[in-house]
Image 1 (cartoon, rainbow, N blue to C red):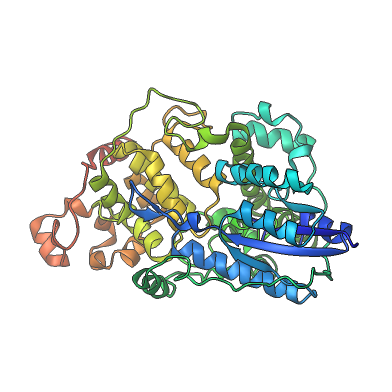
Image 2: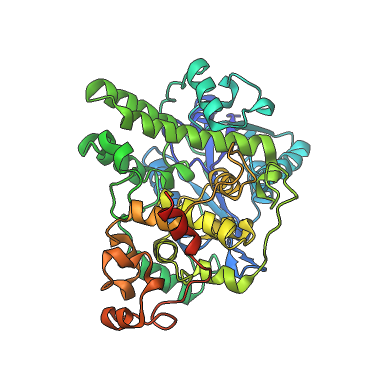
Length: 487
């Protein structure tokens, strides 16, 4: 009887540089590729009133899975799609198809590792192996110059050590043909409605899709095309370090994060393409800085591996029980809806709500504002990002929130952002704020970031009525202005 391996695709929705899938194809006579949609991914969070995974992320995931299916079909196989409890479905499929083993990528956070454990227990009495492969980071976990339990507490030390002692592995070749297991029903790709989304949610998602500067189409094909355009065709990587803090437009940053999050792009592939660009075109601070950002992503993945569930608790990886947080749903909703009366915060939140994307600069500011200026429980903000961000990655998202909230890997005791100063620096002319807050479009650039200080006559002149057409600020912004003047 031929050797059969079931390959369970998870957050590695690609065929290039995918060690687990390549090993399955090389080892087995027949391979059964599978993806399972878990209904619990789309559940509503009862305390907060929004879904764990919203329409933006779900649409991107559906597109990525559809693209993976096409790629497998072009190689002679198909993707088996199911909806339900992953461990139960995979164990049953493996038993029914008489598979010798299940191969999959290794994950590090609680929900995913719990599923791995559940699956392993179900496979043991069936005498079916479960082999997990590390495919998610730039640097392989086995190549680190330290045990994960001794992971440096600061990113700077981590970076210095891996750059000094560790090499990025070579790429895994992409399988060109895949011998499938026959007589297994492939199943249909579910729709948003079948995953539990309402007609209203679906309509809003479609209307929002036209508002974003870049159309994030899920899948390996779109990810590789974006990389080709950004690095090779337009050579935008040459100025990445100078433009990466931009706020408006498609090309101020690479936007690779969405495809990295679902594994549609391999971080090693990006690294090797940049290295080739440095040899064939130019090597400068900008080309290095994109690799630098990939190392940040690695760092948070290893933080998740080391600290486990602490990443998701209010006390953070520091287990800081001294910090207290406010649970104020009404104030949280003001922040989430972009109605705080602080233009730079509101503009960023409205971009997120409309497109499923927010710049890195924006994320740091709105997170700092929620955690430090409002004192709201930071895990609520992290969960809101998880629901909406197309590029949501559990380790990067929750690791960054730990960082900004002051309970994570940060040598500074209190990382607080002066929102007014940040707005003036990164949106000097107010273009970003006016784009997302059209009610402030006629306010002069010199006043738009401090619109709450407009006199009644100025409000009448610019067509703004504070408290009516634009909210009054939820906190006094005087401390930002004072700090700015004292510089």
